[in-house]
Length: 253
Image 1 (cartoon, rainbow, N blue to C red):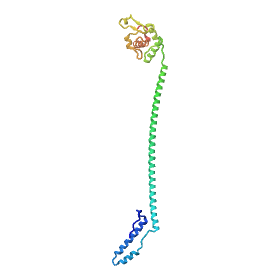
Image 2 (cartoon, helix red, strand yellow; image 1 turned 135 degrees about the vertical axis):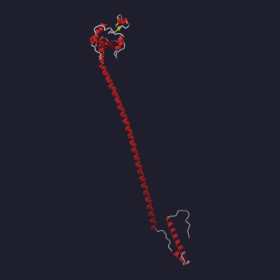
Image 3 (cartoon, rainbow, N blue to C red; image 1 turned 90 degrees about the vertical axis):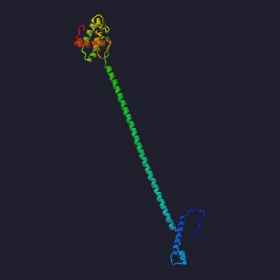
Image 4 (cartoon, helix red, strand yellow; image 1 turned 60 degrees about the vertical axis):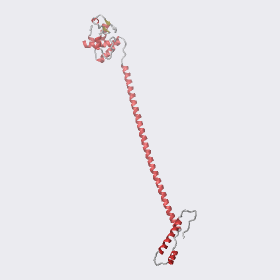
């Protein structure tokens, strides 16, 4: 006959489960005896009453407990191992991310340093060019002669220009012709000779007419026929073409 569970307990313990298993085994045995032909009811009842009921022993309960503890321990060990594997993977990922971030930072720093070095090199090169240009200009200015604003200075300046242009002539050749033609007056003008009668008077230190001045003007000098240096170099250029050199001119030319 079955028993009702006490009120207040809705769950079966392992002991209860073992008891129920024994009862079930007993019932199965009784049913098997009943179904065997040739046995009477009394013998069946005696057989059933003689069958022992299996109840869990202390050793069985301990064995179940040991199995439970073993499984629980294995689960805990597996869980801990999984945690350690996850932690190791995360540490590897973090280290890789940190390494990539460091590489990126190093590359950016290198690119920035290279750009700064290039800019500095370009600035230094530009400063060097400007410094060399100033120094060259300073040297040129130092070498450039300063000519006096008088007949001596005009002749010397004209001679330097003539030398640079390949026009022959000497100081004495220029001076003697200037003194004969204008007595050293850069504003002198002949208003009575044939040139003046033809409308082209002779002008300046070497008494050059305007068409001749225009034809033999030397680049780098003034285009003003009254300018002393321009007048001398144009006249010397004309004399070189017609007479070989201003030094060969001893009279009106």
